[in-house]
Amino acid sequence: MTAERLGLQLWCEDEGGPYQSIPYPGSSWQPEGQPACRPHEYLRGETAKLLTLFRPATGEVRAEAVEHSTNAVLHPWLKRELQAILKQCPAAPEVVPQGRRWQDWDIYPAAEQLDRFFPPVQVLLILDNLAGHKSFSLVQWCAEHGILLLWTPTAGSWLNMAESLQRILQRRALSGQHPADVQTLKRWLTEAVDGWNRHPTPFIWGGKRHARRDRAYARRHRLAGSGATTTYAVPRRIRSVRYYKRVANTAGVGK
Image (cartoon, rainbow, N blue to C red):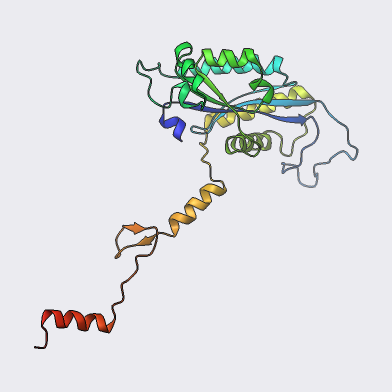
């Protein structure tokens, strides 16, 4: 990933859920002759959400199950986790390289002034929370700590990877289960996060654009049986009989 090559940690933030304390479909182990039963009526249960910070390059996830995900809950948790992440980051270099300056990430000329007031960029945060981007206190706090806030459009690659991870965690925690209350629901989600972090799996984006690039690479033409390739077929020049006769006459052949 480009950000990781620049020495920047890239994290994606998303809120998963809400998850209800109701029976979830899925496989489960039951004694022979005693199949799992499901209630026939629908009763809305208590809900929980999963605050998630995901780093695709390493697969590491920082998450907390909560009953509400308002800014009063999300922003303090986000600051705590980001401070812990910053402690793991190496110290900022004395000479700030290109890609870690604020002006490299902003198209406006005034962005050059940001490098005078804020430390070099250390973390890129893809924040899937529009209210957070409009919160002056959160934006100011992130800038003072070298955290660059970025937003992603609907169905963007970073958002999709964070949501994919949340679906994996939900399946591991709740598939075929019936949490009795919201506390059990939160505990199971937390245990699923701990289990994931024991053996995290990095994510690599392979969307439609990436697939098109793979297909374009597969269409390359090899040259003379070696590993050299071209993006288009090298044409073979077909000489006419008149051409060879002219060459022969010029060289004096047959005289």
